[in-house]
Image 1 (cartoon, each protein chain N blue to C red):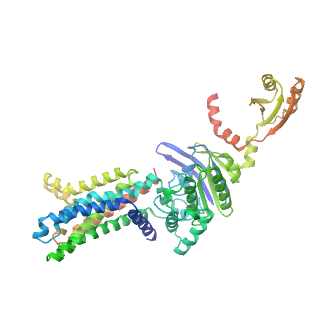
Image 2 (tube, rainbow over the protein chains, first blue to last red):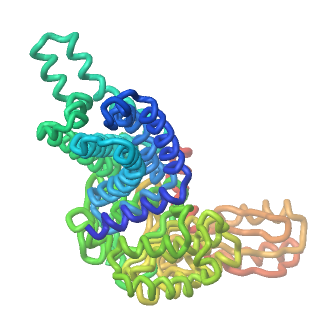
Image 3 (cartoon, rainbow over the protein chains, first blue to last red):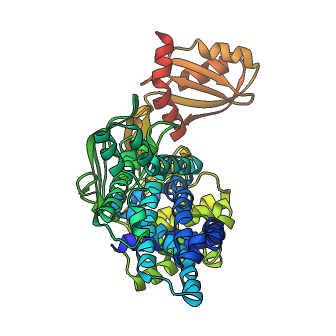
Length: 236
Length: 312
């Protein structure tokens, strides 16, 4: 735990010291602000759905930009040698990195809290769907980070890491649409793996346990795969 | 302190380390010597837990590097060849991070940073970003991180490459100093370095250990061949010809001022040489026996197979 926190703290600090986190946060805020400000749902329903719908896609694109550095850069600079020869478990390395990126994403989403605040000042929004919407966004964001870390563990090239992660995320997001072209039984199974399947429920004010379990499982699965990928590099 | 048994490492199909065994006792400074791509770095990476061996076992500070890897790593300080550093951190931040990872508690970290910064002469640079440091200082930061947790075993992969001669001398002195209380395995391809710092040498070539012994013993092992250096006043061509024909002389080299005569084992043709020279009417200015330097030993051991191959 101590080691995990040490690594998480170090990662958080290097996010603050490098432009990437600021650029990503800046663009994320500008883009979601635009969609929040122009979406009819903001004015008609006094909901943050305009922000959420855009936010979820933007997170899928931006989370890999935050995570692409995490292991790929260590490999490129050779500092991975420091981490893997320190008395630290491989799982602690990955969890520390994950936690570091979780901090950044959480801060980034916390900065959007002024959208519901504005709604609250100028209208009377339903707080329930706002809270569940944020929960859904955080869950999907953490899933994206886990997938990003896994992709970063595969290569020493940050661009490749980002592209692979975005590829996996888009595939998981749109796999739900493929289900309409498949035989019903198969389509149902496939749609269970879709990142987009559960999000509308969260936006609508429902915390679906299946959704929570789904996002947490995918997160755990990719964290596990990243640990294995790191272990595997010792045996190459 | 370090024990290696039948260690083998393949990278895919390529054999990097071939069934090597050696041990390093507590308090020893052992030189790990070999040409590039001999398997030095691979062996060190296995000992530090960065790579897993394909076959064989190793113990560091009494802990098996596979089954008790964390304990072994805890007691090892490692200076990696590439000097891996986080360039976006200050020296202090970097040392503190690595000290934390190695389990030092907060108060201790502070005290240890002060210690190692002093040992490695980094006082003025402690709050400078590592990315802004020159190569020589980066090297020192690399050494500082290797000793910050006071490891029992130090594994240093080419710590004096790429820095200026004054810093090289300082680094060597430092390693010698450190070796008083610690076990040190030092890899290098700079031969004089080994004779300056180390008590014992392990020579590795193409993944195999070709020799391991104290430096004095090694010279006597290989010095089945004896060499003499002589200065003679006279026509060089004729002298070379004459000396070559003497019994027991294997090879002769003339470098413009001195002749180096290599003789077969167990032969001492000195009296014959001086006789031959004087009889021809030349003047023998000097004649002395040449000790095999570490360099000669190294070349002898590592080029052995190649010359044999050519003869076949």
